[in-house]
Amino acid sequence: MRATVAAKAGGPEVLEYREVPVPRPGPGQVLVRVAAVGVNFIDTYLRSGVYPRSFPTILGSEGAGTVEELGEGVSQVAVGDRVAWADGNTGAYAEFDVVAADRLVAVPERVELETAAAAMLQGMTAHYLINSTWPLKAGETALIHAAAGGMGQALTQLAKAKGARVIGTTSSAEKERIARAAGADEVIRYTEVDDLAAEVRRLTDGKGVDVVYDGVGASTFDASLASLRKRGLLALYGGASGQVPPVDPQRLNRAGSVFLTRPTLTDYVETREDLAWRSSEILAAVAAGDLAVNIGARFPLSQAADAHTALSGRATTGKVLLLP
Image (cartoon, rainbow, N blue to C red; front, side, top):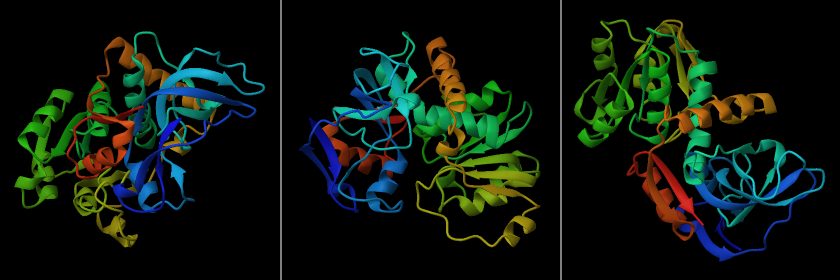
């Protein structure tokens, strides 16, 4: 089969499209013919060495496809089933991937496989942030960074479904249009303001927001912290602009006894029950038309390096997919 392999830690140039053996499913595992792969910032962290791992390696922890072969003891799925996953393991940047059977979820008939691949990681991340990390309530206000991105659009739609007010940040008029189309009540173009937190406080009559959902990281962290109301929460779920340096806990005190968490999806779908809950609600919402999934760019698997460059350069809106 053909796969894109990270030969060593480094920039997008370390990604090589090459022929590798087709993996074989072991006990409790399934071989899936991959139809589409979701590209995520965690892929760039793994490729660059921010998250240590052994090389060479095949990246990609999110995808959708059809079951090709069952390993010993697998009864949850059958050959030919349409499935999706975002399991925290890697190997999806390939024509075939081996996935643990208990990490697979069924794709509803009304959901295309590309859409399922685009919805899994970002959809379930938005689900846990909105429902578990800070259970957002009607009347509360959330600040959502990168509101025109795939994560930002998912968060905005789920927040509005809860009856919350959304203040989004974007970098351009076109991205503002996308954020507003997703439901953002207010949009701040951070490239056009001198003090982002001051603008947030102006929009909240000086109070600040109840929660900040921040996947940008280094370049937004200070403004995120300064935008919170007393006892509010900063959910730092990613670092698209780089990792945040160590933080003095006294800053949380001075900001108004605020809370800071650095969550990850793996911990919120650790059990089969949590995985089934989050994935079923997200895919059902997609199937019903209640959650729009915007696929912003599709790249052939052979052009994974270009996909990483576009994602890291924030040149995309919506979800980025690789197509074997």
